[in-house]
Picture 1 (cartoon, rainbow, N blue to C red):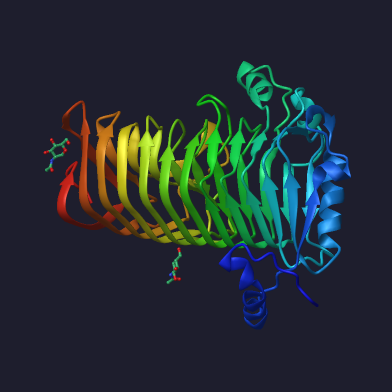
Picture 2 (tube, protein in one colour; picture 1 turned 120 degrees about the horizontal axis):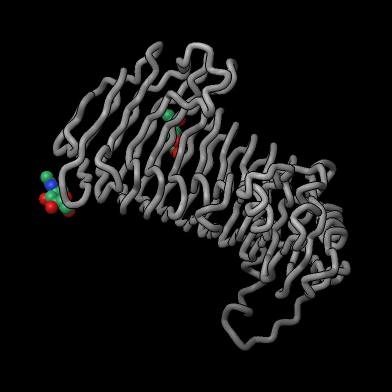
Length: 403
Ligand SMILES: *[C@@H]1O[C@H](CO)[C@@H](O)[C@H](O)[C@H]1NC(C)=O
Ligand SMILES: *[C@@H]1O[C@H](CO)[C@@H](O)[C@H](O)[C@H]1NC(C)=O
């Protein structure tokens, strides 16, 4: 191939050399572009663009090249749940370059009554990046239905889901007003979520910001989450999870659980939550399990460098979860909790009991480590509460430990 170079910068002059170098290094420069607009997507906020998105995906999947799917500025209506499936996809990696907004239908029953559980789902995919853009689930109508107490409301759909997939990057994405969970990572490996913004009313039911389960090697960095349920919830089978640089509030905090609803459950281990701020949240960091028989466990967890600003329950382990007192035969949790470190946690509690360890009578919480805790309530000292909890303290611990 002969290349004609316009020699106006040094970069361009050296381009062929760089090309050879990258090729030798095994880096493929081939990248195909697929703009959803050329497949019929309309940025008018009304025309259903679902088929156009799926057509762009098929096109991106049709060759082994890396592919970029471009979503230009504007509002693109996606009226039905869509699944981007990696089955039969040949592409070496697909990036959604999002400049626009994906909006749901105004009538919440259209999405919620569709039979699907996730609005935009990536399934069986290896190598997917979502960069920028906004997902607007328009969930407020469904929340109002649920809050009215009249019943007859559908569950709703998760906004953005990844299932049975690996090598995932979610970068700079905004999720607004989801009907149900905002982002769910389920059965995935090697996931990086960063610079994400989640925004929903503090009174929106079950709108968890990011939920992770049955997944390993997941990082969640530098994200801002305000919602009506957990900012981040961590379900069964989560291992090697790193969470850092999170602003949470409104919301229910960062929660491991609820766990142990079922007898057979995979445990949670090696989770670090570092450098997070909780503003006006229900909880700060929580571990929660049902008061039911289970073989689940939670171990090797580190909560470090956290700031509480009027969190109601800054530090809490609750193993007596049993809503309406139904289905918890002996009111004892089988989930084994051990090796939990709380280090450098300071700020204000919105209640006098800033530290609460309410553990199972069958399996006590063991090796809880407290170091450098200073939580105040109305500028006064706080207290702690312990049942079946053991461990050790180092340095300043205020409230006074009851371990
Ligand atoms: C714990 O998880 C981190 C990532 O969050 C990982 O780097 C580390 O290797 C894991 N440790 C073990 C013992 O698996
Ligand atoms: C705990 O924090 C309060 C409020 O910031 C501060 O006045 C107090 O000196 C701290 N206590 C210790 C033991 O560091």
